[in-house]
Amino acid sequence: MKHKFILNIITFITIIVCYPVIAIAGGNTDDTDEYKLTAKITLVEKYKTKKLQEYIDKENICKTGNNTDACNENKKNLAEDFNFNLDQIGESNPISRIDAYSVIYNSKDLYNAPDTLSGAILVPEIEKEKIKGVVLFYHPQEFTKYNVPSCFLNASDLPDYCQINKKIKGSDYVLKIGGVFASQGYVVVMPDYIGQGIDSSNMHPYMIYPQANAKSGLDMLNASRQLLKTLGIENKTELNLYLSGSSEGGLYALWASRLLQNSRAAKLLDDNNFNLAVTVPISGPYDLSQAQIPFLFSNVATYPNKNKYRALGSDELVTMKAVFATAYLTSLAYYNFNQDYSSVFDPDFLSCGSDCKFGKNSYTIPELYTLNNLGLTRDEVFKAVRGAATDTINQDNDLAYGSDNNSIKSFVADGLAKDATFNKITQQSDIINWKTTTPITFISLDYDSLITPLNTQNAYLGLKKASKKGLVHRVSISNFDYNISIGNKNPNKVKPIDNADGMVFSFIAALNEFNQASQIND
Image (cartoon, rainbow, N blue to C red):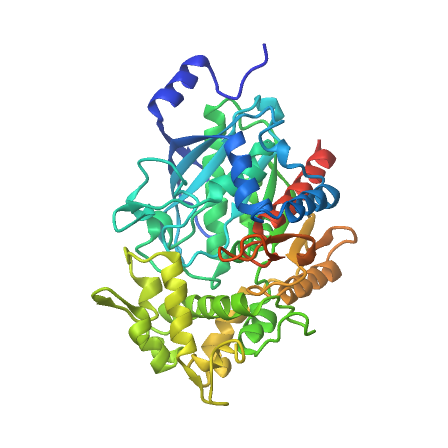
């Protein structure tokens, strides 16, 4: 009889009945000084792959109301473009369950001081010989502190940081990522990030200092190796490592790849017997200084108007520009302007007024991101920021922020674009001109209303020019090949996918890259 993924029958019974906590120790990943990594790993939930398939079907690929033609067209194009069939997740999958573990581990903060962080690891219940490798996945931007990978949807006994007003809130990462990656034989490691999850009392550094958030994910790899050892996969067994992430996480995935190739962090690969098979960053802000920030400051015309920024929809553009910019600038002022938020925001926008009044409580714009246990949902934060932005007048043209004037000049401090600190920190995040020695495939949508595809174009061209021929590739997904419901008012009417709605389709494209790399490395 073949050895199953669980080490033995005693361990198997213990895991199912007791949901154990596993204390482990790992090696060093820091490139400046030695420190011991420890982690606490807890089995939180077991997800049936058939349920994951149902979720991805109804909430993503076929979120088309009663428009079965659009649903079928999505499935047809996924099969043709990325060799993907929805049934392979659960209906025709020999893997019936995914084990979801929460991880609390030691890492470093922005100042290189010890920090305690959290994350999630997804493990398919499969014969250990059939594990395809480990995917280190960096999640996209989250503008609240609870919607992180370790807050598993539908799981019980979640920690306090997963709650709003004492109500459990779970993220759907385990369903999306578990369905697309873990169900196909990959172990998936997902950090919550500095300033999120268990570390939510601190401010998350959105986009700035991406090396620190990249390292926070690399530190989790030690925990993944020790977990796998308890499940029967010894450290001496070489495993392929796949790096990926979406949006904000795409930036960190690319930085993680660079760190592993060009610093003492590369020792992590040898210590844990990982082979870096491929890096697949998805729609990341790789060129903040020359692409993403100019995109935010420009009054961008959307499709079908042609311009280098290639935004698709006006409504998503207006909302997401405001939220992205305020999270980024709040983080920048928190860490670089002594929390003087008037240095980055227009005073009327900063005070927020009635837009940030919830019951008896009123907040400023920065408090929407800095306060712990704020008690607001993601939608409430989005509504408040957009409302405050649209109430602010651009002094250059007397136009309020909105569909006719989506430049963030309307609500940022005068002269911010020329501020030396602002530009220095922004440029430090850029990662577009360097030589890779391992394969990298960039994935992006043709049009994107949050992260301009100009980021991907600049990074792809920069790395391709600097690297050996054949190592750097790009996959561009046509928005118009995939459609989702336009909304609750008319659920049968569909529209092309955009940034948020396109994530699962992008994940499937990334899966295709992993599978190809897996075959090459076998």
